[in-house]
Image (cartoon, rainbow, N blue to C red; front, side, top):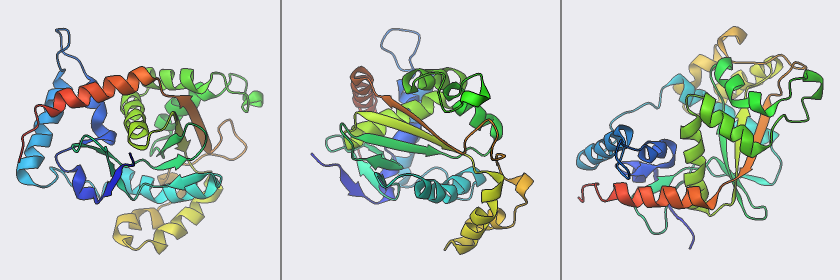
Length: 259
């Protein structure tokens, strides 16, 4: 069954892929929900009663930077990628479960894609270091495969679990077998094109800070150095993780208020 496409108002009061990692937290007793899960359910119920989002972070710099640079990332990717981030997808059978994948590939098995454009170089390094060898001369030969690299990210990056379960959730929504975490920071010589792009955006007030930023104000890499600007971490999502997430969504959904 194809997922239903709705407007972003469907996110209000529902479990969304971007924050769904919270419901995977466990309590002290076997099978119980952890504090992050209970807090998330409580916040969803607040939104259901308010009929609106609790927060409006549309002007936050990391969010506006990610939305802006995502367009450039898509231009750098191959034609096999399709950008779908403008649509919010609802689970075909569970109406309180939704997500907005950044992109997908229609390859064998299907691939869901999430694009991360970190605002700090520390975050970038923590996301991609496991995909590079110790010897910079061999950087095109990854130290670990994508599955191991993602496991290291989950362990070491503060948002590793969040990113992983976001991909699992979105993979379920589009029925994909594989996932790609794409991490991008521009080379310094790309920044002017990004500033020009910011000037062309319809909602210029959201991107004004980028259009007027100095190079040192924006995350950037030196071309020809250790790191590539575009990094793809590809792995197969275990079916048991998909099943575990689906079961936890159903369990937590029992505590959502019906309005």
